[in-house]
Length: 174
Ligand SMILES: *[C@@H]1O[C@H](CO)[C@@H](O)[C@H](O)[C@H]1NC(C)=O
Ligand SMILES: *[C@@H]1O[C@H](CO)[C@@H](O)[C@H](O)[C@H]1NC(C)=O
Ligand SMILES: *[C@@H]1O[C@H](CO)[C@@H](O)[C@H](O)[C@H]1NC(C)=O
Image (cartoon, rainbow, N blue to C red):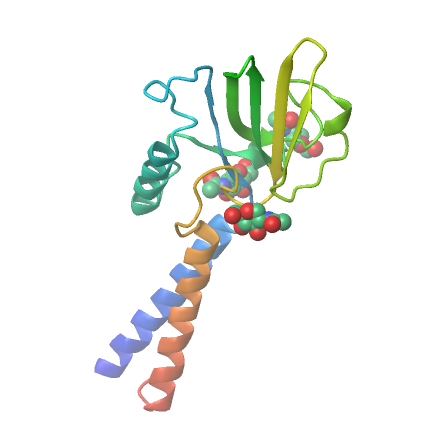
């Protein structure tokens, strides 16, 4: 009887693990937000702590955060950070999904950018400075360091497997 219960729990865990991996393994999630201020009190998108809080809350609830965007819904495969400055002030600061080709300011320097987290900056003739950072992993255009969906599902699978091996070893499971 007890043995049966353990088998059922194990199967349930395995099923959940597979479901979670399938639900979350595809698609790219990026931060989406925009600022047009240099004032740190008003800035949201430049406010690392605020985004991080959003992310931590979202992960706790297992939901999409307020500043999350599912790029796969838009057929976009990159995350981007765009910073546009004018006379030393932030004109706009954007985090979003990207096709890797189209940016708010088109400059030669932004052609064929690699998604390597490196920031490329270039001046436009009229005194605007534009910087673009491209990357292609979940939430890479903002605070990382938390646990991503993919890692959660992998951890879950690992845990289940460990349980499985442990029980097998003690001849509880089969
Ligand atoms: C993102 O969108 C894709 C395609 O619509 C979907 O398969 C995927 O599950 C979504 N991811 C999340 C975390 O909602
Ligand atoms: C994404 O691509 C699919 C297939 O190519 C297409 O059917 C869909 O309309 C596209 N979605 C957007 C938002 O462009
Ligand atoms: C870019 O940064 C993200 C988040 O820190 C990291 O997961 C990813 O591996 C980096 N990509 C490259 C090419 O360095």
